[in-house]
Image (cartoon, rainbow, N blue to C red; front, side, top):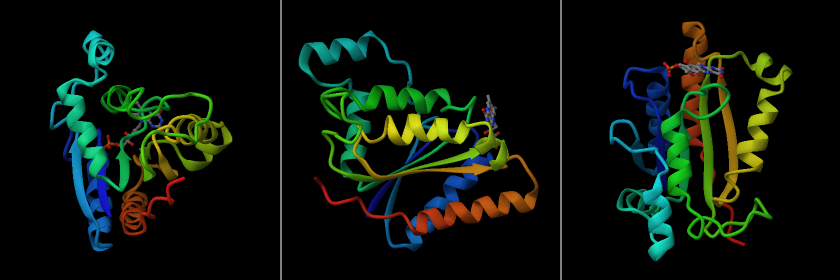
Length: 199
Ligand SMILES: Cc1cc2nc3c(=O)[nH]c(=O)nc-3n(C[C@H](O)[C@H](O)[C@H](O)COP(=O)(O)O)c2cc1C
């Protein structure tokens, strides 16, 4: 498979960057080709502006920086989004990437069925380092909330099938804990499933 990794963290020495490296190593070991979209290093502009609105209304085509991202998606069979959990959500650059790239008319054209997309099926994974411990995440309902908004409510519209949220909890914890999370990231790359057959 061709695996696109979309990464949001400005610091190449961050734990999230190490997670991305391990995921990539796993995917390459499994025989996949990989492509890294390092949004901060590439200077992706996350602001959804009048330019996005006008280009959509005037010719149904996206601005050039968005067409480039859509081309990357078009060549991918699998997509892994790697980002640190920020305030129980996505950091701003990735949030803007989702808002601007997966446009109405290209990614989806209805809101009634979160399992219907204009895109072909792609295997999808959200690999998310988080400072909180896993029991805090579960007991307070954050895990369910994130599953609902991302797995049930967003990425089906984009054709991610199968799709999975993997929270890497305790990312700011002990060295041993972090080693364990890095091993999980490698395994996630190694075992990335193929896309479901198209409907
Ligand atoms: C602005 C900000 C908001 C954060 N919000 C959360 C949060 O809501 N839940 C959580 O578990 N961790 C949160 N964290 C911790 C990060 O998820 C953690 O630092 C990251 O997973 C690992 O560190 P890294 O920056 O070296 O990659 C937050 C960190 C920052 C800087």
